[in-house]
Image 1 (spheres, rainbow, N blue to C red):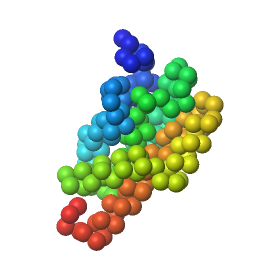
Image 2: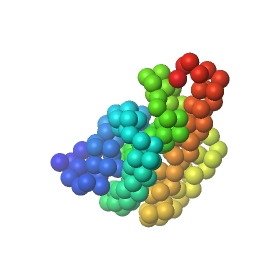
Image 3: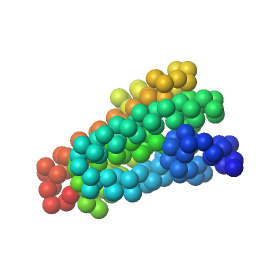
Length: 168
């Protein structure tokens, strides 16, 4: 099957596009983040150790899958790759702990804002990663800028809890 120039027959493509969500024609990053919400919601019931180990496993697996998909498509950062959004959004949630509905919405808004606006450290990593040849380090950098966006989002969530404890 050929969707948007990407053959969805390989497990690496399923992971890097987050089960095809990244193949949606408009706003794949936003839809990739939306696609992460069920994972984040389900994982909140697990122990922090299980959550962090699962996140770390997905980070390693995602990096390998980004490399495979990027190599096949001959693109350092294909738009269809959204595992970076999944991992970045999940990092924000992991930093906070258990989020209620308002918290999930706020995390989504904060993460998307950082990911789209790309303040200096995020923009720097994003640009640097796009200058490298496709490889494992470059594939990690595709994810790393979203991890920083997730980290900043997580910090703002923690500050929100500190100053507006009844909101989240």
